[in-house]
Amino acid sequence: MNIGKAAQATGVSAKMIRYYEAQGLIRPADRTEGNYRDFSDRDVNDLRFIRRARGLGFSIDEISRLLSLWRDDARPSREVKAMAEKHLADLDARIREMREMADTLRHLAHCCAGDERPDCPILSDLAGDRPQGVHAGNA
Amino acid sequence: MNIGKAAQATGVSAKMIRYYEAQGLIRPADRTEGNYRDFSDRDVNDLRFIRRARGLGFSIDEISRLLSLWRDDARPSREVKAMAEKHLADLDARIREMREMADTLRHLAHCCAGDERPDCPILSDLAGDRPQGVHAGNA
DNA sequence: GCTTGACCTTCCCTTGATGGGAAGGTTTAG
DNA sequence: CTAAACCTTCCCATCAAGGGAAGGTCAAGC
Image 1: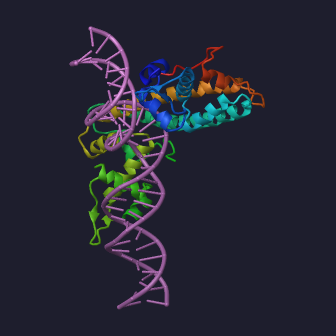
Image 2: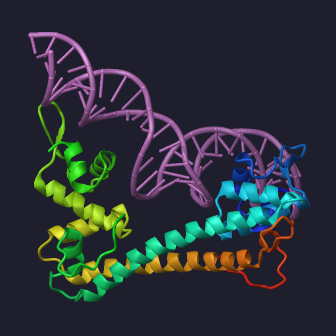
């Protein structure tokens, strides 16, 4: 199976397959006589695993460890769960940050008339005027 | 005021001040005889504006437009509000995506015993076994 | 007045995951 | 046999930020 077919079969672009190989996420694919990559079913499964893990927001490094655990029949599920919970905490922290931004912005936009007049609480807030003191802490 | 003082006064690192200048976000600072940048109060205000806008997640390009609007006494607040709402929609979309990831991950972690045994619903899910069908759509 | 240390300057490199595109080799269908 | 489709490697760009080197400037203390 060449890289184009593998990409189609897994939903991972050819570019990214080469990148994952270069990063050591997947082992170097076999090569045909003409130097084309030749993917086995196992490779395809690995790529699907990677795509799903990316879909959950895991980084390349994290996925590398997840793949090792996956391949290890004697893994303790404790380790996988720990990774998942660590990543979950990261996600939740980022979500919280973004929600603070969004809430602040929503409030400011709500307070802005949005007409032809120049008065604008959004710009006032950015300029540092804080009449109402509603603002996310810019950590 | 040299760049170090300006950085201290605004909470923007010297590196980033130079970067903003290079990107055309702020006008090139005056120079002393010794070729040091020399920041005016107005520059400092601009930098504070930029820091707050970054804190709300606006991109450099967006901040560039916000600064123009801020400096324009005849701006219609409509334009500012439109930018804010556009950015808010982006934020909300990203938050939604991340929340889907987090919810899926939370469910999987909850279902994982997290002990010494190898059985792991997290890995099973990534591997493509979908006994329970609870999974965020990996768009 | 000179030294020293703190600060500044520019320039280049790195990040992370992804894509664009060029130059050139291979395979496949007609 | 040719043309199109596909593959290869290599380099570049993204975005906001920081690291660090090499060298110039300034200020404080002696």
